[in-house]
Length: 146
Image: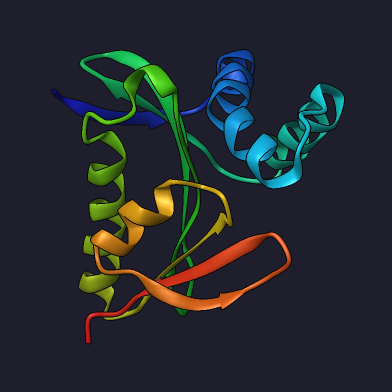
């Protein structure tokens, strides 16, 4: 599978909203008990406007989106959302490995946060991330070159 990324445009908003809702509904319901479509639309809109995103493509088919921030002190995986139909095929792994490679090249940590009930935490830990803290809603994870 060829995994590529391209800059997101305003035309990608509805695609990303659909992927957000389908990928996060299960996590949100496990963690918070209910899915509030209007609240999730507001959350998505605020997030989508406030960051630089890329569309993830698998063999040319849009399958997710990602926001990676190269900050002064770290590489921050702000968000990675993969459509459930494409999960389990190594796409998320490839993205996280890219983040690790970027951090390693700069000799800085890679950081991210994930909802407590997000099954992707298993992936992050498998790829070498360790727990760096907790908030009421998120597990904070960090990868260091050692």
